[in-house]
Image 1 (spheres, rainbow, N blue to C red):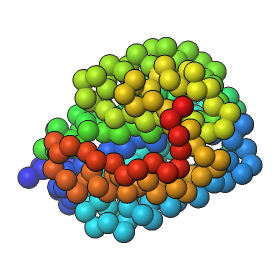
Image 2 (tube, rainbow, N blue to C red):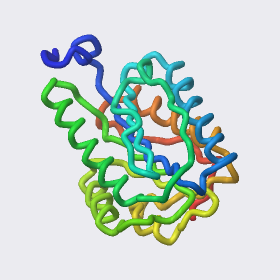
Image 3 (cartoon, rainbow, N blue to C red):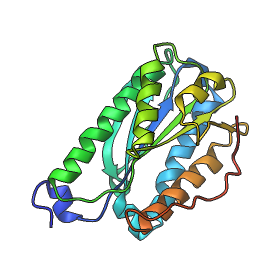
Length: 217
């Protein structure tokens, strides 16, 4: 039984952490950012429908343009989806490194409080190319994947530099290109996938739903 933070005393369930890395740079202005906002709100609604997942799935959100921790880790019932606005450039490398560091700190908190956790997910959505150095971030992602410390997913919205994304994403999970602005189906898939993971045991093999919202780049 956890003896530390009240959040774990009140809810000692296993945790399924996910970090959303969301591109909110200027090129996302207009319909793309509007659909992204709707998708994140839908993500919350869908996970709340699942009694187990609502206790186990924890979400953190990092937007980049500039890099900001919009939402620190919280269970879905405490998550209030923000309204994103498109601005600035695309510091993708910095955002990825920030997210990896945030995950490591959260895992340390779990361990300190006796909480078991599923392999964390990191979900990157972008419509552009990094405007900062990204090579170290790519190395860190691939190293973390190889050591089974994270599951990294990259989603390319129209206009994204898929050549760079393929160098960041792990070879066995190449970037997916979003069909149009189908953020709704993307976030439905993400929520259903995390619900499925969170209902299983920590080391269970994962079978994910088919991807109808995108194609492999």
